[in-house]
Image: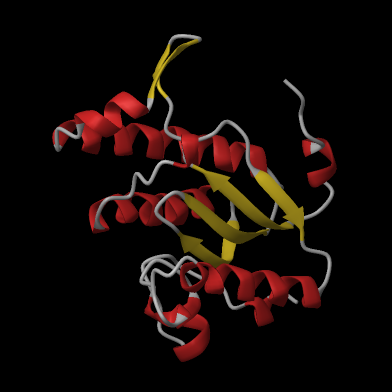
Amino acid sequence: MSRRKRDILELYNCYFVTTTFNNWLELLLNDDYYKILQDSINFYSEKYSAEIISYVIMPNHIHFIIFFNEDVNLSGYLRDFKKFTSFKIRERLQMERRSELLHQIEYEKYGQKYKVWKDRFDAVIILSKNIMFTKINYIHNNPVKKNLVAEDHLWEYSSAKFYRFDVEGTVKVTNAGAIV
C-alpha cells in the first residue's frame, strides 16, 4: 500500500485532517456515539502531545486541525484513534442490537471482521494563517452546508461555539491565535 506522501508530513506540525467511516455510513446514532469520538480525540491529543485547533464530528466523517507540540506522528495518532473508536462503536452497535449497521460494516479480510473507518485519511499541511482560518471556517460551516443546523454554533459536535462565544465544549480546543 502506498504511503500517500506521509513521509513529507513529518516535516511540519499542523494539519487539516479528514477521515470518513467506511462506505460513508452514518454510524453516529446519538450523543453516546459522538462522545466516543470526543473522548478519544482528547485522549490521543494528550498522548501524542497535540492540540486540536478546530474540529467537527459529522454523522459519517470528521474534520479537524491538529497541531503537534513535539514529535509529529499523525499516522500513529489516527491509527490509534481509529482502532480504539472502531472497537467502541462496534461494541455499542452490538449492545444496541443494530444488526443492519453491523451487517454493513462486516469485513472479512486480513483477519478483520468489521471495518468502521476507511483505511486512509487526508491531511493538508497548514502553512499560513490564511490557510488556517479558511480551514476553520470550512470545518465550522460543514453542518450548515449539510443542513444539520441553521447556524454553525448550533452543532454540538464542533468547535464553532468555542470560536464564536468562547464556550468550551467536550473536546479541548486551543485557539488558532495561540499558534499562528
